[in-house]
Image (cartoon, rainbow, N blue to C red; front, side, top):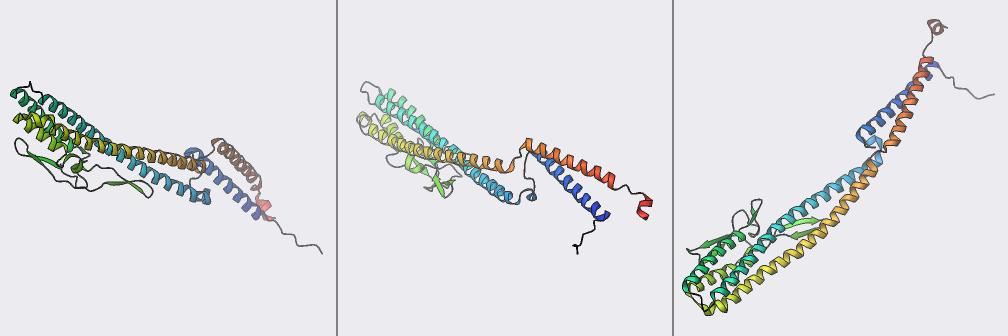
Length: 303
């Protein structure tokens, strides 16, 4: 006895035909969307496994970009600090020249007073340098950097005050890695052997005509202050190199993430065009079959 043979009805054929047409229409829409957006995956159903990887890569790109932004801001902060310290070094170099000129035995009292006036200008310039700001924050004020940290007292100035602190500004530049980007202002500009002390003493000795001090103690104090400034510049330079290395690594990582995401997400245009043409051909063929299949006359239906 032969096996049962399933009877294929006209309704079943119509259902299969409609299902095929629906699938072809969906594929047409998918490939049209791919061509319009340039992306292979436009919704989770396009590639459920790939979507997980795409989301992870996008998250990696965002994190890398955040660190790159931090590196850029840290570099700007340190560049401003470096420029200010270079100006401070130039001020001290001019002060040394003033001390050497003032120590000359042939210079008159009026000549020394003129040099003292020049040194007073250097004191004002040093104050402006010590109160350098970046984006509304004072770079040598530590973490209490909303107001200018240095001020001169007396007229003419005989001392200075510091209202900042020695707090460190640490910025995240890589995963689990931060860096101190600020320079302690009081340690650089203040102190009994700092630039302010050296300039004030130089001015006073010029006004007093103290040639012995100008030729010895003043020059020594200026050299010590200049060394402090140069050491701060050296520390900034080392941190800048470290920052550049971190930035290079982050750029490489960011680019790797972007390229990987492109591999998962971007569509192959030529392949998408071919797939679209095939889907359109399948849909057109299904329409042709439908036109022939769904043509029964009333008499046919009544049989």
